[in-house]
Amino acid sequence: MIKRKLQVWEPIKDMGDMELVNFNVVGKVNITLEDKHREYSFLYDKRINGNFVLACRFTHEMKKGDLVPLVVQAQQEYFVSATRPWSTYKMTNSDFIQWYDSLPGPGSNDIHIEHHIFATSDYTIEVLSEYEPKINITDK
Image 1 (cartoon, rainbow, N blue to C red):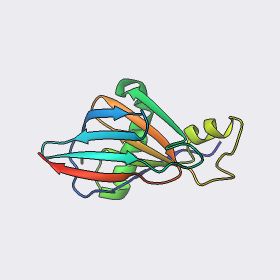
Image 2 (cartoon, rainbow, N blue to C red):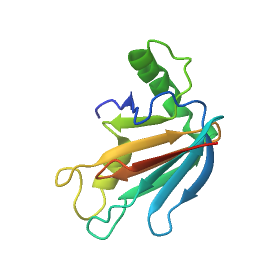
Image 3 (cartoon, rainbow, N blue to C red):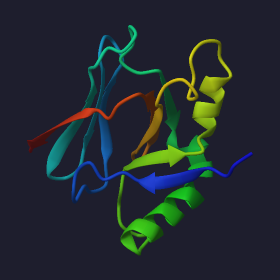
Image 4 (tube, helix red, strand yellow):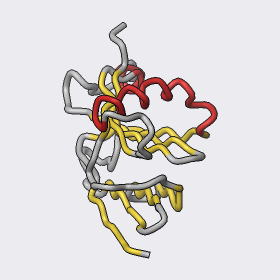
């Protein structure tokens, strides 16, 4: 098996420590996070083959300790420091995509699939999608 690799995904500059405000999968998929100054809404609203996203995972942060060494490495490579707060990542060589590929139907050999990770102090939300979400920012 190829080793998983996490990459910092910086769709927005200067995000701080994030808290989960809302995770809605009814209809469109909307993930709302906030830091001290702003609220960020990540909206998956493109319907491709009947779906807004391919799959989602919602896990308590304590159960996703396997990501910690990958986060440290990704932050050191991108920011030259592992102490900067950051919440958005993309995974390559993803075990989540491998799991999705094991299901019947089209997989990553047929369509472009991205593994997006949203990490907060309490939760980890993972999304498999064929596109990046729209992002709305609201000042507090």
